[in-house]
Image 1 (cartoon, rainbow, N blue to C red):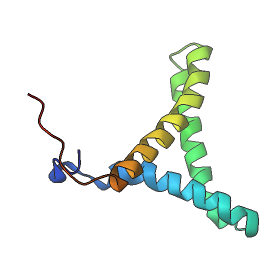
Image 2: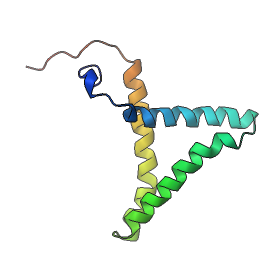
Image 3: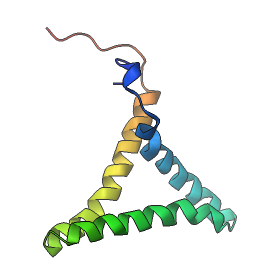
Image 4: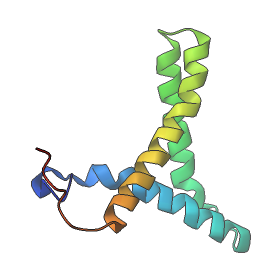
Length: 98
């Protein structure tokens, strides 16, 4: 979509991709180097996730709340992976569908 409509891109759209790259880098670094400051973005994400699940729990039954706890990180990771994949694919515009 960014290739077709470049003016529609906003930096916030890249946040899940950057977070996914951060998680991959964290997995590599944490095995070789102990860095507590490096964990702060992950802690902030987990706190925001907990707040989101808490807000959902005020109006929904327990089962959807537990699903939210699993689906939000999965959605962010898959969106980030798709964003990165889109950046790495062929740069040609798609053929128009007639």
